[in-house]
Image 1: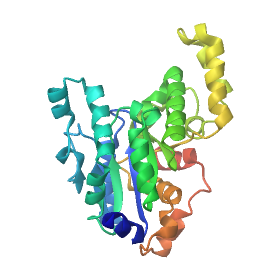
Image 2: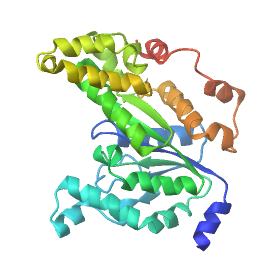
Image 3: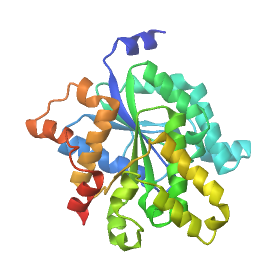
Length: 299
């Protein structure tokens, strides 16, 4: 009770929850953005590892779930497979929320970057992670979900529509302010000739009737024209999904993503961070489309 009162009386905390499928670049991003925020923006920042199977971290986490539980131990002791063990770990963390809270209360005045597991079921329909961050929101933690998707999916219409559906399901289920990211944009540049449309079609998720035509002509998907139309219609009806391309090797790309995240979680309004006029102006970026910024930076 004393701990809860202490947190409730504290100023608001801000951070981002980095989620997405395995191999989409989450852990690499967490390591890069930690150094970028700390060294280039002079922002006090810490990384929280909540992936109990993360054995290849690119950073030194301030808080590490592997001190509480690991997938390897669960698999060994409960005879579960890797997916079942990971879900068990998240349920265990939810049951032991006080452990996380005790760790977080010791991280004062820092922007938090949560590195999360890669199992998509945890964000599409499993409730533990959603419940954990809902509890943190009630304790004045203002968080934004940063959903990573590998940009190579843009080169294949069936994979891209599955990406859209996954992003939409995640947005609806997690319930946090949300920014979708197309990672590895530098690789996308090298393979731009393989795209059926211009980049703005994929970042802004424009008229998907064009994508429907490709699905209806595909060697496998042409058998499911009614299903294709239903999936495309679902994404268009909600009209929520859009992407920001990211090259983690580019400071400018990291800055533009930072601006979007800061707006989504309210950091630009509620933090006490000192800002230069140039930083304030950078947060107002928005006149150009994502594709225009991408073309200017990488093409």
